[in-house]
Length: 358
Image (cartoon, rainbow, N blue to C red; front, side, top):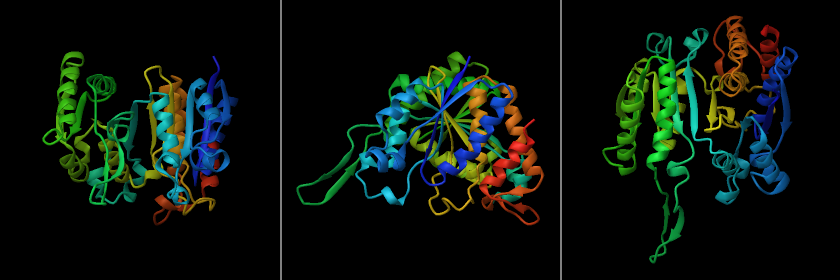
């Protein structure tokens, strides 16, 4: 069966890293992967062309696709736009419209990059964490929200943090399933001591894991402590499940334990198995067009697409092995460059991965 992939290059370095990932898809297609690829506009690029960060055509193509491969959105160029028209609203809209409630963000440290981490090797060597982030609710989507002017003339900004029992239960089940495939341990991160919404979160996660995944060991941690523990003793974690806001912050913290956010992909999946796959890094407009971006996170996002979206475990491992070989050969983009290695650009790194695919 042919799988339909929608590619959304987006803004900044997005088109550059997507171009290298597309080469990987083209190579795999010659080896039997049955895919049909289309391309659309999102974010700032879509706003510049069509006046909206999420055009209807893009949304329609996304709804009919089996998987979406996204580059990056945003940049200083669009920061003065109204909130509803900024590039990031296109991404949030896509997540919401497709109900991509489950965000999987691995933090895996390649052995070749232990020296690139800011922490001591004995603390981060062998790091392998999966952060399961709720993605379509919480404070990023809660209503009411906005900025109002009070009677005294001063402005007040407000947002709403809200979770329903069902929203928590479904993400807890995803975490439970992943934990069963790993080391059967979950740490649920909340702020239940001061936030009622996460008090409910803790209660529901506990019930779901205890009732449906009795072999999984569940622990709880407040988000401030979790941030500290990620830096102090990151290897104590295996699967972390948390809210949209906390997951956004903790996953970037965990990513930097690996030396660079340019190395990590992510998957956002709905209950039908449809997914959006993207690097966790931003659009990095300061290096856009300079052939300095690291495409490996986007290429590893393709591996996640193959594994979680298409059930092509063999091809996923093939891509991951190719990335591993390139790193073992000493090739590095500027963000992960270290003494004695060979610095290459975005395009050269992509070509090197292609040459190792077999």
